[in-house]
Image (tube, rainbow, N blue to C red; front, top):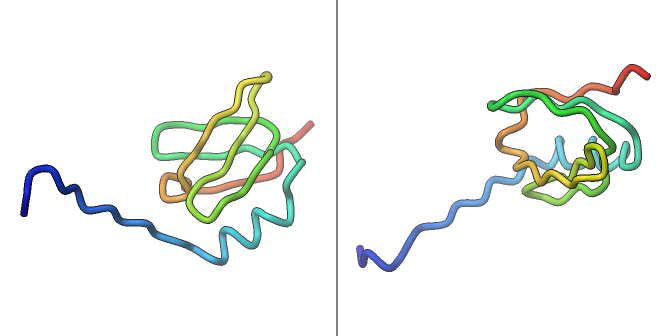
Length: 73
């Protein structure tokens, strides 16, 4: 393989995508492999979500999500 070519892999989990799409706009807690974040779910794409935390968007790969729960307010 040529060192300039990097293989790209995209994993799509249709169940996670469909479920998260139904709760866009709500406050959630997302546990990732690196820790947890709490904020408003702004966007759901096949490979990532956008979570707004204190006005800052966080782009989280769906592959990195361990669990998602509604935030207790």
